[in-house]
Structures are given as structure tokens and as C-alpha cells.
Image (tube, rainbow, N blue to C red; front, side, top):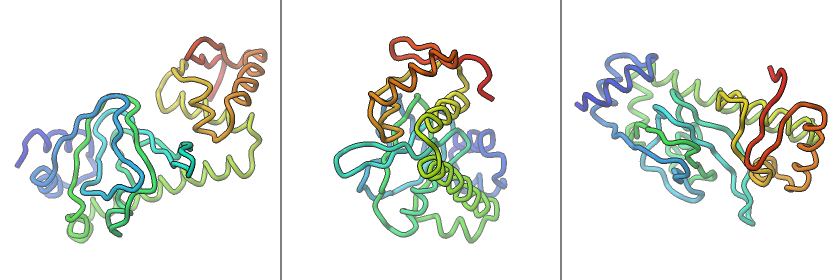
Length: 215
């Protein structure tokens, strides 16, 4: 049994029963990643699913022409629902994942997933909760696309980024935001300039400061 993994799981995934932690500690491996590392690629088969211990991972959908569309974040204490689905059905990934910060994950072999689901209730409920929460996040994205104008989508995006990263100063570019929202850099620049004029943000090179109340 890997005592280091056992300690990490006990601290980062307190919902897991002790017997499950023992099993995961014997099966799992630690994966460390740096900011910018590509952790998942479109078209790849999965050998493991990731339990994020620390750091932040961003999932994208890749278009036919190489464009990227933001799907959701995987934060500490979470797992990648899409990798679980693809792994269980032996399908290739339809998303890509990139580390936004340095971090660490526990890698759990996919060929153990069925047994874990059957034998350990805490794993079963963890997987169900992972599916549910990710489905809700995807619905939020769909709602924003279907029912909100681009200025509303941009404000929602900035608010979510600030909340997820726990900061009022976002380090990003207008092009990166445009990629995430599937629009042009010119549209984002124009809307951000309008928000700056209204006192909602302060703009500088590669930084956007959120001003006032964004709750």
C-alpha cells in the first residue's frame, strides 16, 4: 500500500470510506503536472481517471478547425466525469484538458472502475455526484449560449473565472476569452472596453481587474 497516496486521499477526499482509501492507495499512482501541461487529448483512449488533489484543470471542446470552446474546470476534490464515461464505454476522448496551474492528481486505473462501483458505496455516490455536477455545469454553458447575449455571457464568464480562481485580477488575454466563448477577439475587446467605461473592470496588458461587487 502506498502510504503517501493514502494520506492524500484521506485529506482531499474525506467522503471516501476507509476501505476504499486502502484499495485506491494500492491501485493508484501520483501524477504531478505543471501549468500548461496537456493532460487529455481529443481522440485518446483512457488508461486512468484523474482525482484532482490540487491545482486547476480546464476542459475544452475542440472544433474541426482547431478552435477551442471552454466546457468546465476540474478543481481539487473533483474528478473528470467525461473521462469516467469514456473509460467505462471504452471510447476515445472528445475533449482536451490543460493544466491552468501546477498541481497533483491520483490516477486510478479504468479497468478497476466497475469493481469499485459495485463494492464501495462512497465511490458509487462520488461518481454519481461527479456526473450530476458536471451535467449542471454543461447545462449552464448551454443556457448561456442559447439565452444570453454576448455581453451577459462575458460578464457571467468573468464572474465565474474570478470565483473559481479566487481572485479579482484575471491573467488572460482578449483572444483567450474569445476562444472560450467561441467569438472573435474584436467582440470581446469592444465589450470589455464598454465594461471599463462603466466602471466594471480595469484593463491592462494580459490582466483584467474586476471592480465593484461581482457577487
